[in-house]
Length: 144
Image 1 (tube, helix red, strand yellow):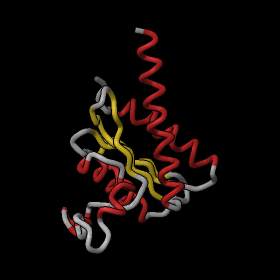
Image 2 (cartoon, rainbow, N blue to C red):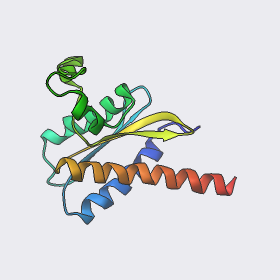
Image 3 (spheres, rainbow, N blue to C red):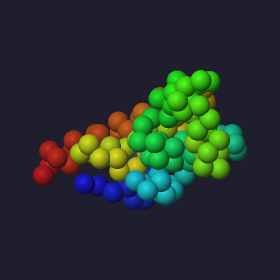
């Protein structure tokens, strides 16, 4: 199983940045390892400063909760079982889309967090990193 390291993070960030450039939205892209530790954070020119913290927290939340952050939106609504969870962990839990786990061999090996656009755009750009990981894994298994 792969581990999230800087070399892999750079490849995932590059794929996400290309997607962000394609839609013409400057983004912040963060990668964390399976323990939620920051491995890399990339702020595109003109990306919002607030997006640095948000992107890192989206990636952390995705690992900590073992799910995409977009899945938290419904569960955290008023009266729902996870209502208020975003106030825990010193406010680190993000309850809207843009954080997606990085999975290999059915194991979470890290996560990507993206911020800077609409929630839909953040998810789209984060998905580009996830797709790159899948592509790299497919390529590696073909050559083995």
